[in-house]
Every structure is written in structure tokens, then in C-alpha cells.
Length: 212
Image 1 (tube, rainbow, N blue to C red):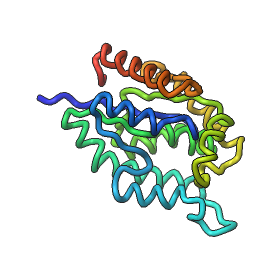
Image 2 (cartoon, one colour):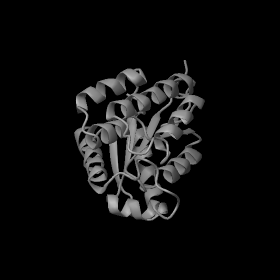
Image 3 (cartoon, rainbow, N blue to C red):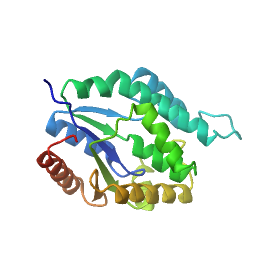
Image 4 (cartoon, rainbow, N blue to C red):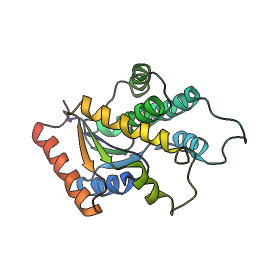
């Protein structure tokens, strides 16, 4: 019987280095690498529409509930079409954002009821939650400084400082409430130091026996 693979999610605010660290870890452990929103044709279309700075008519805002449902639609397809089958085959998956980002951004950031968002995440993912969440923790001001020179900020990156502070506090609250499944790493360190801390966290998960 094939053992289920391990699901590892990188979480954190803008400019924390999630994409870089997710790629480094996936390469190191030969895991499937993917991202959210995205990972499927449908998910990539939703991502483009949600994040493009010009995706919405001037003067019209996207209701937080609409944003939540679109994020969850992308996740449901992602789990069904890609993440679930890879895990069932016995291969590990590394994902750049998963349900904790929804809780932090649409729950803490947008102010939607946390427990309702949690139940919606569970429904969308088929009650699939990461075996390990890696929070790359960095002050929003530092993250914004890293992201700004690269390109025009996307719709969520362009939100105000207060929004990103709420998101950061949300991630920390989630990590504190479930320390067995979370590790918090100082993302202000250099790339190599963060990568080493990530590998140690994954090694610890392995020593505990992987998925529970």
C-alpha cells in the first residue's frame, strides 16, 4: 500500500520570500511544487482576475465574500485535479499558500468571521489541511520594500498598511494556536539561513512520522 505524501504549505505576507523558499524546498526533497490561487487552468484564470491591478472597473470594489468564494473555487479544483492525486500517489507536495492564507487575508484582513471562513476552507479542500505550515514571518513594511521594486503591485499587494498588519497578526495567531503543525521562521534573514531553517523543520516533521 502506498503511503500518502506530505503536504507542506508556505505562508506569510507580501515579500516574505515564499515562492523562492517553496522552490528551493521542492527541489531539495523532489516534491511537486504548486501555488495558490492557481495550480490548474481554472485556478490560473481566477488568479489573474483576482490579482490583476486593473481587473475591476474603476470605483467598484470586490465584495470580501466574493473574493473568498473565488479563492475557494480555485482551491477546490486545485485539490481535486492536482494536489489530491499527487498526495495519493505517495509524492510530497509543496504549495505556495493554502488555507491559512485564506484565513489570514479574507478572515483577519477583510474581517470575515474566522470560524465561517475555516469551515468554508474545509469544504473547499475536502478537509485537507497541511501536515506542516511554514510561516515566513516578516514585518509588512519590510515585505513591501522587497516587493515594490519588482513590478506594479497586484490588487492585494496594493492594499493599505492596516490591512497587511491585520494579515500579519492573523498568521501569527494561527501559528500560535496550532504549534504542532506550524513553524515560524524569521524571513528577514538571508535566503540561505531561511532555507536551512526550512529544511530543519521538514526534518523534524519526518522524525515525527510525517502525516498524522
